[in-house]
Length: 311
Image 1 (cartoon, rainbow, N blue to C red):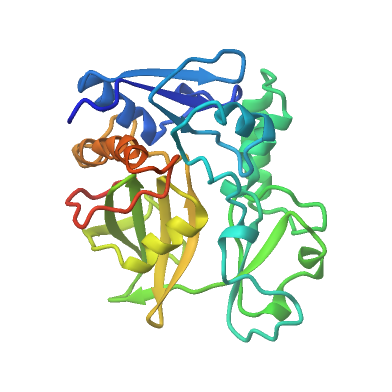
Image 2: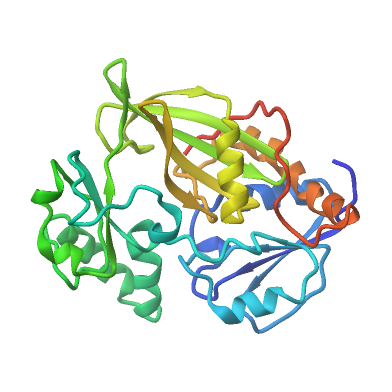
């Protein structure tokens, strides 16, 4: 890795430090350090350090304004523009009760990851919050959808809009999205596009259940990333992250856009380490872009990438 980046700072929310979850960025940071790049985490806004590149890694759906202003002090910021990843902004397939859409639909929280990061923040980090979250998690599996529902453990699927409880449409914290599965060879498929700067990778996972997860996947295969995904990424202001999408009836449907991706295994797999090694070099593209006159972000993806993601 060419040494055009000497120091990287990672800005995290004070309630969500890197050590709090298995963030993929931890693997990237370790790779940068192996290459001789200094990496410092700024957890909260109490301390400022100069750096060649700052990475915005705030695990909330909407980045608080004070964090945005803090990052304005840096000339190069990864994910400077990716400040709002709510479903109402990300999804092009939301529907309302009067839309007349005839197919199946899925109810999601407008907030990312079921609204759980925001809920944990509201708990103010009390020593009971972990237990409380687990108890509520079990309750959410069976709780009815109401006009006050803010968090979902699972996203319910309905055969049609007529079957969706009226309270859902009166709830600003919930959205209704067309359920557009990709199904072939007896399995549901989910495609993942992981990227940093000009480096990227694609993988497709298959499961026998409609909601494809790492825990229920039965196979994985490497895939190419269509140009349309790169365009979506630029439009949404993403420099680093992971997009989940499907190809339904020949059209791409973006399901989720995540700027703080995680991995599931307690010990990173060799596949994950390979992905980290491949994507880590993408950090250099931001200083190259600055040399070309760009302030930050919107790096053109490289033509090829061999690594594949594993979550």
